[in-house]
Length: 354
Image 1 (cartoon, rainbow, N blue to C red):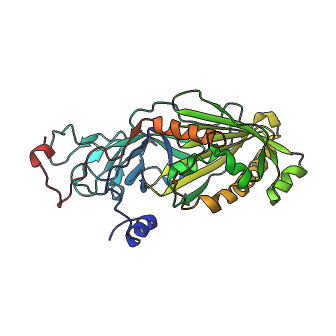
Image 2: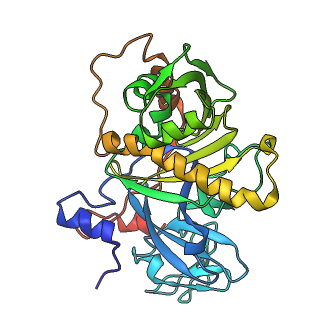
Image 3: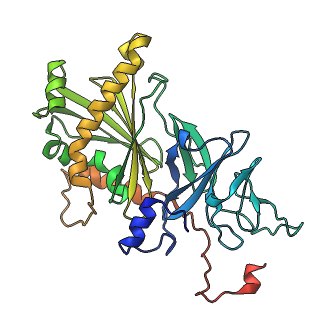
């Protein structure tokens, strides 16, 4: 009996390729892996990400680890193992790995080969989410709401899409869709700005012209136009700020496979609103619901969308084209840093034991 997730069973039943068929590369960045509450102290869970299974665990002291789930010895599933002190133990031969992926115990031998280690992600927790950095040591700090935001954030909404993750991450930079999908009439040409190699930003003003309930509510509250700034970090995390409502939105995207993605959505509010402490949870929930209502139109058209570029417009698509160039410039990495050996492959045993 396997411990496949429903998603993995779906892939198998629908004839999708195996998760480890080929190493998939993605930008070196911070990615949301799961909710903090999903990984209890002393427990391990399985999570498919980057086209491969991960074993995410929390040690008895509370330290987090996220490693490629196929054990470096014979490929046993580490997510079926258990946490022993500060390590994760393989269920087959009881090899033990620390949170960095280094093997620290082989019961059958005292010497540990240098190659006995798992690909791992540096992990941090924020806003009730466990983030992992793909690509070794983090090249930049974990993106978050700025100091201007209140420390408390909204609850997290997680949504799955049969869509490549870059389609979701780039959506904020498609200026045309704000008018056609969201009924936000642009009042000026979007302004692009870049603060670092891993960053891409855009800012624009637009009139609230829609007839949806959330649009009518905004106008009733005196919000006739919006000023939106969207900052993308590492090609997958977007933090947007609405100047008229003083609200922040985070869209953090996880590539599960090449064509399947998961997005984590949460909100924060600016200190500029001077809210009484007792009102903050209510305002956060209202803001979160308005955000999800706004995204409903996106969900309807983005599901199963894969870009097939034909004619791009140098002016109307300028911000989007800039995002594509930025995304293509990002250094990449893979969770599968060495080929997975199977019985059907010709194996060089001298190489495997070196």
